[in-house]
Length: 115
Length: 113
Image (tube, rainbow over all chains, first blue to last red; front, side):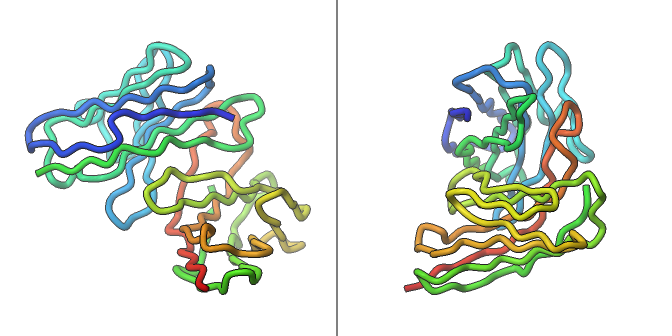
C-alpha cells in the first residue's frame, strides 16, 4: 500500500492568483496522477505526472493552466494558475505501484474555493 | 475503457446485504471490473476487482455474470460507515501508460438504521 499526504487540505483563494498543491508519498511509486472533482460530480483525470519529463494532459486540460512537476518517485505538485470561481473543486493525487498495480491509492484531496 | 451503467442511488438497511449492480455490456475480453468507493470528503478507496471469476475479500464480494456483461458488488452486512458513492470501472490491466482510471457517476449508497 501507499500513504499519500496532500497539502494544503483546503484553501480559499482570490481569483487571478495561483495555488500549488503538493503530493507526498511514503514510498517510491511508478505512476502518479492528478484528478479534479467538481462539486457534486465524479472524478476527472487532469494529467499523468511523469518523472523528469512533462506531464501527459487529458483532453480539456493544458499545461499553462495546470502545470505539474514530478522531480522524483515520491513527490509531485499541481499548480492551479490564474484561478477563477470555476476552478473551485477538490483536487486529488493518485498513485500506482507497478508491476503489481492492482489498485490505485488516493490522497484525501485538496478542497479549493476561489472567491 | 468500456462504459459502465450504475443506478444513481440505493438504500440499504444496516445489517442487511447491499447489492450494487453494474452493467458493462461492451466489456472486452481483457478488461477487468474494478470497484472503488468514496466516502464523503475522502479520496476514493479500492474495494475489489475481477476478470471473470467471482472474487471475495475482507470488504466485499464481486459476482460477474458468465457473459461478463454485468456484475454485482455485495457488501454482506452493511453498516452506516458503508454509506458512500460506489464506482464500477472496467479497464485493461494496469500497465504503463494504460494506467488511468475513468470514473463514471457511480451509485450513492445510503445505509440506514
